[in-house]
Length: 440
View 1 (spheres, rainbow, N blue to C red):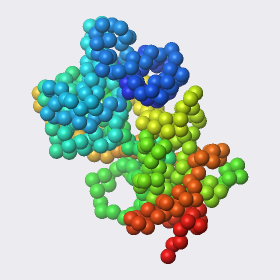
View 2 (view 1 turned 180 degrees about the vertical axis):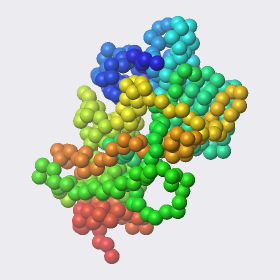
View 3 (view 1 turned 120 degrees about the vertical axis):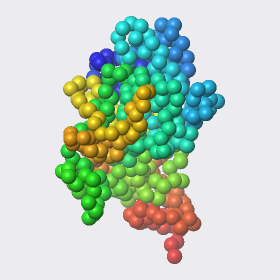
View 4 (view 1 turned 135 degrees about the vertical axis):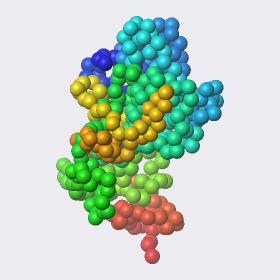
């Protein structure tokens, strides 16, 4: 189907509009209640209405107070969307938002079908942990989207799959931003669906002949596998972690960072990143945090994208950390909107088949009958790699540097807990904190 318009839920700093508007896809409305994000949307998208609380949107659609989009984007919390509460409603606010997401899609499709234009398309992003929630949140979510009478129960949800449901077809795939040109390990599940005439598997999944070996992992000898009949792409890559930029010596401690989290602005020294160094840089021998500008780069946004009037650094960190990895969204959107000739027919055996639906749980590289393989891994065939030192801003203000006392504190916690630490980071910390700590 042709996609000309979209609506956005849990809009945040609106990565959806940042990607889709250059493709001439018009935002009809946004939905956000957080103060900073709402001010941001009013500043950056003054002509697009912010509907506020998404709980009110189904009735707005029913009353024809808002326009009906071709595409619905959003990422609601999946946790607490429980099997027990699926039919009767649940008390947890996060689970209610996920139920409301389905209600909004149903309300949109009801109006679209009445007008004779067919069901719309929906796109949903969430943390990888949505697949392993102990309440079978994902099975409930898929069932609600597909129009099924009961939740789908499987022993273990795969990181990719396809569901041909009673009312809608749905595909999902976990992908990692570090293979899309961002130096950040950010694994997220992406869910795409639409009516029975829509084939989301052709967008999210890839057909081919090659099984990709993770380029970040050293190649070792292995036992023969199921995929040995296929050509295997196995590059080895290495990055220089020290770079001279405008006369400044910049050093990273890993080629890519851990996942950027929303609380990075206030909790930068009490987690794994403080010991592996992945969210630090060294500039001219001094340790510092990533600035909000560098975090924008780490997510694929332009410099100072979140810099609006009367904003705090912590607000920028939080908004960026909760947003979407732009290059991944762009990859999906390009395949959805631009590459209309994409085809992929799933010919492997279904995991579950009955009179209500067919479900396919896929491995990273699944043999697809006599038609090669389906790439359902976290790495696309056209992957791109980048390096932490390349996001460095040499004009980072002094306030983001770790004080001598702060460096000593990180080292002290390392020794108190007998924790592992990046070797180079430990050297830099020692050099920065000699007057506060003596290492025996």
